Length: 66
Ligand SMILES: [Zn+2]
Image (tube, rainbow, N blue to C red; front, side):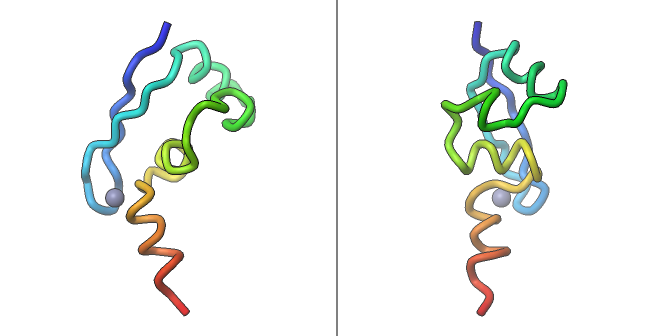
C-alpha cells in the first residue's frame, strides 16, 4: 500500500510530494538503508527524506560553488 508523504523543503519551503509505501518508510526509519528500503525513489526524493532539502536547493547548495 503506497501513500504520499509531504515534506517541506527546509530551504525553499516548497512542499515535496513523495510516493512511498508505508512499510518501506517504516523499514527505513527502523534503520534500513534508504536505497535498499525504497529503491524506486529518485535521488532527489531520497535527498528530501534524508536531509530535508529538495533537489533544486541541494544543487544550489553544493553544485554552484567552485
Ligand atoms: Zn528547496
